[in-house]
Amino acid sequence: MNRPIKVLVVDDHDMVRMGLVTYLSVEEDMEVVGEACDGAEAIDKAGKTFPDVILMDLLMEKMNGIEATKVLAKTNVKIIVLTSYIDDEMLFPVLEAGAFSYLLKTSSADEIAQAIRKAANGEPTFQGQVTQKMFRHMHNKPKHDELTNREHEVLCLIGKGKTNKEISEELFIGIKTVKTHVSHILAKLEIEDRTQAAIYANKNHLV
Amino acid sequence: MNRPIKVLVVDDHDMVRMGLVTYLSVEEDMEVVGEACDGAEAIDKAGKTFPDVILMDLLMEKMNGIEATKVLAKTNVKIIVLTSYIDDEMLFPVLEAGAFSYLLKTSSADEIAQAIRKAANGEPTFQGQVTQKMFRHMHNKPKHDELTNREHEVLCLIGKGKTNKEISEELFIGIKTVKTHVSHILAKLEIEDRTQAAIYANKNHLV
DNA sequence: TTCAATCTAAGACTTGAGGCGGAGAAAGAT
DNA sequence: ATCTTTCTCCGCCTCAAGTCTTAGATTGAA
Image (cartoon, rainbow over all chains, first blue to last red; front, side, top):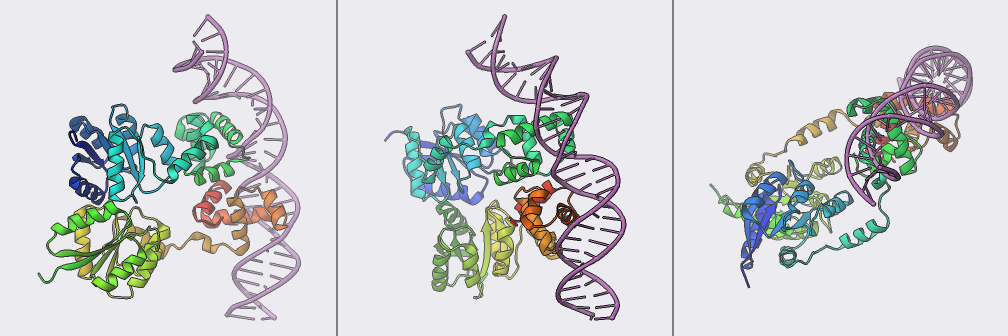
């Protein structure tokens, strides 16, 4: 065996970091070179410690894991997402952002160690339902994927119960423009009115 | 100092248990007497190790934390709920079930140790917004309680995205009547339009 | 019996929402 | 250099939504 695999642990939960560090310390072929509790700190630490693998939590206070992954994936570090549950809203964005593996926090310590070894070797690990979800995602992507950024913003505000006037003020655009966006949203989502749009936004956790 | 506080750690995440155990082992006044990864195992272990305090996760595979709390709270053990986020759907049921303290997993290791000491001493700990939520829960029971049966029915249909006309047909009443109900709903819920009503209905799982 | 709550509904009125069609500007892709 | 996408905005039009006020019928409680 060569040099140990250098691991950076990123999680805003004290105890999760502690658990990971404790376990990984007994594994002889890997070494925790740093810890971070948010995305920004992760980027900072990664620039100093040059890890081979990063264990990354997704939900964190300051900068979330997706943002950090986007930045870090540009280097050659392998990012293993380690999250509490499979959330469609997070899964695909983070995979697109460049995550290399996707594990649930219910994983045993051993499974995590295996995933780290594989990642260092260039093999991704995807837990259970993730593969299925990816498959479904490919063949049946959500309708709101077709929305433009602006339309997405408007839909979010509709989902909060805002009127067109309020939206126009919040986005600094004219009411007419908002109406145009709304019409496009309704057409793309194949629904009839803003009420259904609001329901859609909430059901799909776009709010 | 007397005998150490006996702690039982219940969580289905390997790493969380490991993190807790690691930390608590350096605290001299407490001792982890057992670990469990679901509610059933927790009850079993508690019956054998007689802990003073139980750190309990809520979301677990087999038997969830609420069920386990209901059973265990009947003994004199103090149960500290340790969860990822404040979910109204879980908070009050688990408090009613007999939980003694409520902490977020974002807590520092030190905060958790403090909560354990306090619990052993008979003092509950509630983190941040929990107290506020409890207060609001007590004094501000859901607004839709004031709704009449008919209004409740109408609200549900609004929550499904139906128009007044559709509602009138579904309930075999006139559109004018539906409008009357809608107006009353908006007034009682203190909102402005049916879109907000739809969001309300969905958020409060009235659909 | 009397009173309060609920469900029903009407008329008159205002306004927000949404469709339809057109159009200019900027940015990227080819 | 041209085409496409996206974001911006206009006017015109229709209709659903919502307000306000009033009111009859029923039911159950005081």
